[in-house]
Length: 212
Image (tube, rainbow, N blue to C red):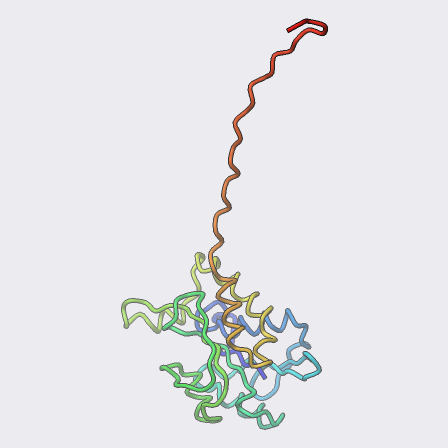
């Protein structure tokens, strides 16, 4: 079961805080999940990958109540926390960076705090870096602000790669997943210019039959 964290509503869809929704949307498109439907105070859909039924959830309760929807869905489908993968924004990672781990703290993230309260901490977390503003007083406005136009340079590259490599997470190959993401996000090296070959001087033509 994968969970994207974010706030519902069109006014929030491009917020940095909604990158979890964005990642899950990209995975759902890439792997041809069913249409979204309303259930468990959220939007859910499903597909089959490698003969396993995979569910996706986007809680629609606002961030600080996300655990309500996650707990309800996990209980209904009897999904254990260690089989839940949560995608969310991380202030303490640079934009475009990504880390995966099982368990850990919420680091002030209200969505994680809510899930921890309902399920404990044994689920998997995919932390997607959005960077942190220098002024602490700007944090709330920053996470609830839209991505800047310049962010498309890394965001439009990161989301498709996450979707492409997602099956590795289902296989618990988190190390390989992170390595492949990091490799894909490296800036392209400029191609070396081909070495120019000096032109050969034109050869003098000799008349036929002329003795040297």
